[in-house]
Image 1 (cartoon, rainbow, N blue to C red):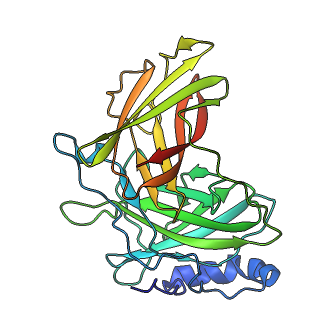
Image 2: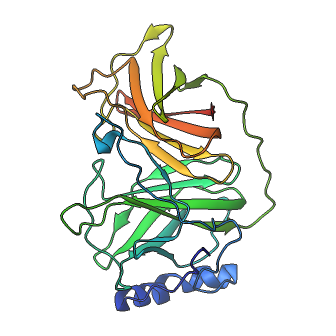
Length: 298
């Protein structure tokens, strides 16, 4: 199945927003308002939510994929296929529904109405943001400076429709101009550090999925003061080296105030074997830490 070509934001308010806010950017970048099919876009539509494992609530099951711009009538519409290099930028987009208009009613999941991720194709530059939505359904993600190259941007959301709203992950690629300097993927390992914390992550196959165990320490002592982040003691995002498929999950550990750690357990459904770049986010003393490592899945 061919990846759907982009269409302009069709809602009247969206058109006014495009005319007001995007013309300067388009003049600089010399690009059209709509996004053409990018070569890096996947040719297959990927299921955004994976079924829960037996005996495990669905919200604890890791979802993976997110390589399509459109699914179930919902579409990620963006104003430009390019972003500036080397400086923060406000990236605006909309999620349009089956009627072609921007969706404005989203269910809250993991404490937010929409989660937004950015990663360069060499799996560097990870950003996890929570954009603001205007009344007309236009979202603004305040991206930190992007290095030149091709980036994939993901929107993770739950349309607030029907008796059983379903999580969707949609994405598109954008180009940041300039000479790209790809960074080799670090070799697989089970340990890394983040802001003085040591993190060990191990993966064990189980019933067609994997159980991930993260252990966090500092100065050789177990960390037991993890604070809730997005209603959990950690958030784990992983990207596949081959096609940038996304997997995200939270630990199964019950939240009990600022007393998380030192060990967190995740159950993940990785759809493909190979190397995954993993970003584990956790919080202590009001500071968010991000630990990154390469995990190999057989």
